[in-house]
Length: 508
Image (tube, rainbow, N blue to C red; front, side, top):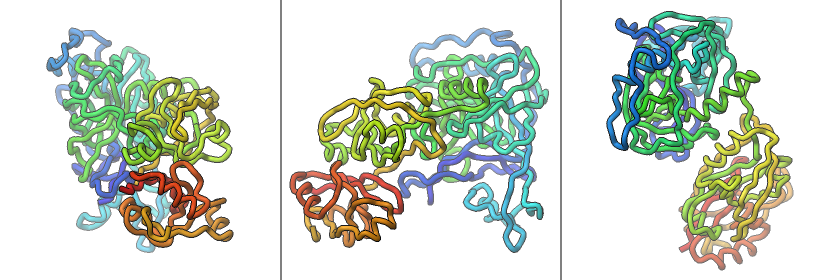
C-alpha cells in the first residue's frame, strides 16, 4: 500500500462514515503501509451533546488541575470540566473547483478522500455541477485562547472556506472571521465578535516526556465535546511534507473532526493541536500527531500582526544520516543533517555550503536529524543570521548564513535510499555533452550496469553518480581510487529523475 501523509477531511453530508482518506505525500519507505491523515471532517452530521457544559471564565467554577508527581494519573474529570468549555467546533462551507470527465463524474485526481467513494456501491454519492465547482461542508475543532474571541485551529480545516461558524460548548453558534492561515505549519487563526469566553491555559511542550499522560478534546465525526486520553508516544517526529513541525506523537484516540482541537497535558495545559493520524483505514489506529503549541503560537503572533506567517530559507535539501553514511564521512554517530543539494543563488550557496556537508549545530544547538534543521531554520525570521557548525572532509568548521524568505518548496528533506564490476559493483562511463545539457549537469558518471554492493544499496542503471564521499565524481578512475581507500562503506551522491540524494554503499 502506498503510504500517504495527509489530513483527514470531512465525510459527505449524506452519511456518517468512520474512515476517510485524504491527499498526502509519499512516505519515506514503500514498505510502510498506512496513511497519515488530517483530522478535519467534511459534511459529517453533528451529534448534539445534551448536557454540554456552559462556558465559564478561565478557572471559574472548578478547582485548578493539580500539579502531578511523575507517574501520577491525572484527574481527567477536572480537566474536562474546567477547560472543556473553551473547546469549540468549527463548521465550514464553501466551493472547490473540480475537473469533469466525459461521464460528468468529477475527476478528483489523487485525492484519496474522493477516491474512497469509488469503491462504494453506486459510485459517487453526488454529481458535479456543470460549472466545475462542488460545494462542500466541513467540520473540525478549535479552542479559544483569549476571552475576546481569538481561536486556534488547523489551516486545513478552513481551507477554501467561504463561511466559518464556531459552535461553543453551550451550543451557541457564532460566525467567525479567518484572520489568516499558515499552510506550512497547518495553523489558522479565527476571531469571533464576542467577549467573556472561556479560554484554555497554555503549557510548555518542551517539558513533555515520552510516557506522560495527555488528553484530547474535540468533535470526532461531529460528536462535539468528546474527550479521549493516552500518553506521549514520541516527540520531535518529522513527517513528510511537514518540514517545519516537530510533531508530538500520542496514542490518544483522535478521528476525523478532531482536527484543530487541543491536546492537554496532565495538569490541564494545552501543549499541542491535534492534526494528523497514521492509519491504513482512515480511522484511528493508535498513532496520532499534534503540532506543539509553541510552534502554533509563533505562527499565530505573525498572523495576528500581519495576516500571514513568514519562514526563513537556507536553500538546501537535507537527509538523515544512518550508520553507514556516518562512517563514510568519518563520523562516529549518525547525528546531523546531510546536505544532498544546495540551491544556486541561495543563502547556503552564498555561505559556501556544499553537498556532502553535515550540519551538526545551528547557533550552538545540536542537530540530530534532518527534521531538526528544517524546524530550526523554518521557525527563524527571514533576514536573521545564524551560525552553522559543519562537518566537512573529516573536520569541523563554522559558517555564517543570512537567511532568506522561504517559499513552499525552499526547505526540503530527502530520504536515504541507498570499475567495470569491481568492489563497488558499478559499470559507469562519463556523460556526453548532450547528456549533461539535457540533465543540466556539469559533470557526472552514467551508471550502465549494477551488481553487488551498489545493487543492494538501490543504485539503478541510468542514475548519474555526481560525487563520492563529498568529492566530485569526474572520472571512473577517481571513483576507484576512493573506493580502494574505504574498506567499509562509501557515500555516493546520485542524481535520478532530477532529484539528488546521498546513498550509502557498504563495501565489506
